[in-house]
Each structure stands twice: as structure tokens, then as C-alpha cells.
Length: 282
Length: 273
Image 1: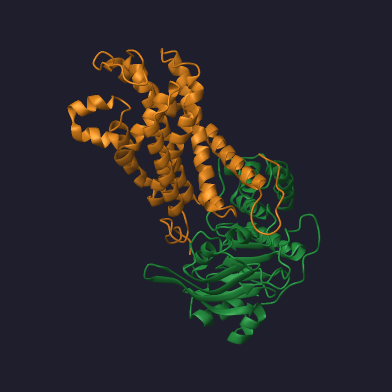
Image 2: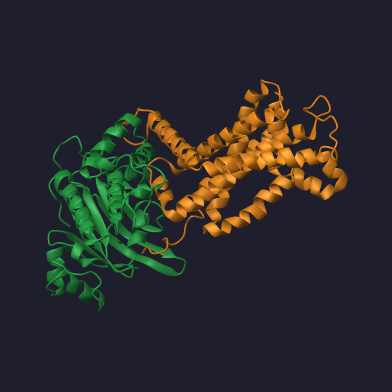
């Protein structure tokens, strides 16, 4: 954390105060993550099950032709690796929103929301913190996947970082937006059925879109307009040192829209958080 | 409401508000505030002030609107009508400046149970832009003041209810606010813990000149030297020094004054001055 706390005369906050706030929120999120070892393990096991079992089983069934960014025929495991990286971020984004619902029910959210710093900035810090946690998970996954012959160019581990940050922000902002509309923790099961599964399966994570088009033109368009597909493609291209500009624009645009929506939703004078006091309060 | 003497200077004293007329502005001013949940009116034309360096008890039964009022002051809810000022800073228009001067203890516990006592304080400090080194110094000071220095490294979930409440007060004081709001801060605590917490807060008023708004439904938490605001069904029925409210109602203590004002029949809060 920064030790700079010089307070400017009059109104406003210094750059050091903003930075201190950001590092404090990221630090707290990381501490919570480290305290929840089960969360880390399950976040890692989930994509590995897909990689080791699902992909191995489908390797012989699904042939992958040469499509960008790949320059040769690839194994199915190599194809779905970016999709699984995005899946980690999707689950992490939804997990963060789950923790926001929990924090709100338990009252912890108030600690954040009564901070004097601008609420939009606080929520952005929260998003960055969630994204940072997702990066840890993705790189842990990549490290294990390397032993499974999923070895992108060494530079790819670096070039994929901006793509992961952007997609992490988009999916985190989506989770935050969803969390603002959930009144009880129990309702979160619906998020699994109505958000996570449709987004993941109706995307290019498991199969290339040209194959989807052959099977169902309608589903093809659903996949094409699914922002998660673009997160997957952004990561896929970045992992091989390339940029998919359309995906970059879609993911960047969606991240902005979801973020504005989440900030709007948590605005006390306008948003969805407007409701009566918690149970037992008067 | 009366205005107490200005706080004495010491290094624990709250940050001084950056307004030239700071000594004259109320710590908290509520002007014509109303709030509704759909068709249900929770607060109706609320008006009162809290003077700097005073202890003001906000007395009301469950459902009176105390927590709604706290949510408006802390900007958890948007202000639908009226104005709320903290040392002259409008909560609606300049929330940053207003919230900077405010410490708050909510009715439900808001601590992170999985973090340690110090980690909770450091997180709160960061949310106020206080750097790590300064935050550690301040944490040590507030924990000592609240008698929790020996629990600094403990997980919060290992603390007793009374200790958690004291920690929440310590946390609320960490950024050196000029106004402290406490919403039913002693609910669920035993008699000794309640007395300890009330004693700590009154000490803060006396020693540091912090303005305190203490929401409660317990009559025995109000003493003769306090200021009093009686809130009932979303309306302020009486306000002023305790002695004056009692005299105006023709009662002989807070309990019976409250009963006469509200028409309530049950004694929900024990003894009174």
C-alpha cells in the first residue's frame, strides 16, 4: 500500500489516496482468496477436468482445420485452452458477484460504500481486484497445461496479459451488474443456469464457429453476438501474439457498457440497490 | 440543541474541517428529509441538528425509521427530498467531503470475519486513502483506546460480541472523524459490554469533542446531559436537551416522556434518568 496520504486543500482526493484505496481493495481481495483455498483449487480443477477428460475424449471426434491464429493443424486440447482460460475468468467474475451479494447480505458491503472516495472508483477497484485474482488462476492453469503439451510461444504468456485483463474486467463488470439485481444469495443459482452455462456453451470456447454454422445457423448467430465468444477469441489471438480487432472492440465496448451499468446500478439515488433496510433494521 | 466546547488539541483529535465557519456549523443537520419505500413513508419531514461535541440520542422503537435515516446520512440510499449536511458539506452534492468527516457503526456487523483485527482496520484505512504506515500507527492508537490492543492479531470471528462492537467503533474512529453515528450499537450485548461501549463513546465526546448521534430504543442509554431526538413512525415528536423534553411533556423521566409522546404502553427499554 502506498504511504502517500497528503490531503489536498479544499475538496478532492490526492493521487496517493486513490492509489492507496486501490491497493487496499486488491490486498483485501487477495487475502480473502488465499483464505479460501477450496475456491482456488476448485477454480483450477474445473478447467483441468475439461482439458484432461473432455478434450481427451473429443480429440478423435472433433477435427480442427487450420484457422487463424493457428498456422498448422492443432490438437483439440490446444484449441479449447483459450476457452478454458476465459471460463476461469467467467466463473471468477460470477464468483466475485456472488461475494458481493454475500457482502451485501452480511453488511460488509457498507464498509466499501461509505468510503468518501467516488463510488464509481470504488467499484472499479473492486473489479480490478477480482481481475487480478482471476489472473493468478489463469496463469496457474497455463503452468499445468504446459505439461499437457499446450505450449504457446513463450512471448504469448506476456502478450495474452492485456487480453486477460480486458476480458476479466468485462466478465467481472457483468457479474457486478448481475449482483446489483440479486436480492438474496439463494437466487444466485439462477445465474449458473441463465448466465454461465449459456454464455459458455453458446460460444467459440469448445468448437469453432464455422462448425456451429454447419450445424445450426441460428446458434451461429447467437454465438457470434455472445461477448464471451469475443473474450475467447481475444485471448486465443493474444496467446499467439496477434490481435483480433473485432473481438478487442467488442470486449472493450462490453466492458465499458457493463461497468457503466454496474456503477449506475450501485448509485444510491438511481440504481437497483435502492431498497428498504436489511432485515431487523429499522 | 446545545453546542459543546471546542475539542482540545491533541494528536488523536479528529481532522479539522476545512471551512472557516466550522465552529458554528452543526456536526449534522437534517432539513426537511422525507423518504418512502414505494407507497410506505418511512421518514416524514425530519428536521434536527447535532452540535459538535454533543451526545445526541435518537430514541425510537423498532420500525421508527432510525436505520433509514442512517442509510440516508451515509449515502447508502439516495436522498429523495430534503437536505443532509455534515459540518456544512451537503451529503447529496459533496459526498466525499461529507463522508470524510463521518464515522459510522451500523446495526448489523460489517466486519470481515476471516481477516484479523488489524487487517480489518488496514482495509478501512485504505478505503479512506490512509497509507499503510500511518494506518498501522492509527490502528495501534484506536485499539489501545478501545482496550483491544492485545487482540490485534486475532481473527475477528474469535472475538466476543462486545469486542466486535468495540472493534467497529475503533474502525469508525480510525480516520479521525468529527461526527460519529452509531445505530443500535449495543443490541445483543450483555449489561457490562453495553456499559463499556457507552462509556467509551461518551469519553470520546468529552475528550475529543466528537459529535455523536446514538440511535437506540433503550431508554436507559439516555442520560440527563444528553440531547434527545424522539423519532416515532417516521416523524420527530420532540427534540432538545433531555431535561427540556421531559419538562415539556410533563413527565418525570425519559421513559414516561416517550410514552406520553408516542402513546406507547410497553416499557421496552428499562430505566431512565
